[in-house]
Length: 465
Image (cartoon, rainbow, N blue to C red; front, side):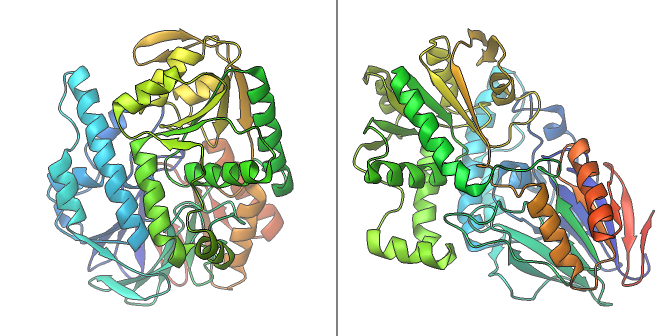
């Protein structure tokens, strides 16, 4: 293989989800991420497909963060003979275990309904978690023969990290995972990666700009005021990690300041409740300094007097008995599972209902279909009329927008080492747009890879194989 790295795009080239990259040298094979593809259905052909590499030959796996599209297929590796080392930050470990056990439960129910075998089960999750080694940011660690790595904060979710790999000959390759929409109320800003010969970066919002940060909170507050005035249920499909915690934080601030009528709020997601506990646990170490100080002063950042967290199914059912208006936050964020489906089936036909879309919705997902104003949507096997008022909240994504991504690329290039930037983890139009902007604005070489592409990366060159 000669010197340097061979990089193969096994997933998330030409798509946002399914992050999976194989990095090889003469002495070792390392995976970065092993996520599921998300879209029209939770169980997809791509999710169950064989891996495009020899799983038992993999020496190590590095997980950038705990979202399913980055970690969701990891237990499947165990079933197929993976016995290598696994690396991630400590918060990612706690969050990944919650996400994967929840996923195993949902997958088992879905597989039973479709009369098929689940991709993995709880035992596979336990076997995977037993192999995890936690690594702090900024520490050089040998992860496989002749390959070391360093993690840096990306400010995307709690514990998220970019991965900079270094080969024995000094060649370096960095993979960003997802880059945060900095500044965040909770997390530190993303950190630059100035020491990579080649950089693979995400591009979810590579062709779009978020609204100004100052407009985000006021838009949410005004939208909630209108929704409460309609008198109906207010549904917020909740991304369990980060988005839910941000929403709770902002709602707490609005109510405390008297900016909103004090209506009942329900967090109807056992997963989101457990994730919030992880945020409480690691916040004093991983939040931005001013937020850490706020936690010390106030205790919890996410709880307020009329918030009810409903873990049990019966508690969830009892929400129906509470008169409107009320706010219901429930998983999942793209309306493709969890408890939000039952609430949508009940409340979407009512024109006094307001449904908030917060964050990216994959093409074909129920959340995308609802947000685009379809008159009916298929939920849990049934067609449901959609007469609710839609509020699509821009700027709440956990991903950097086109300007933030260009700033990230510029910060990497200022290190003077990066020869090429791959734009991946985005829809094809966003990947191409970002690559063109990197070329036009920064004068750098940018490549839009396709699934299955392999590239040889050395200190002197980047060559397609």
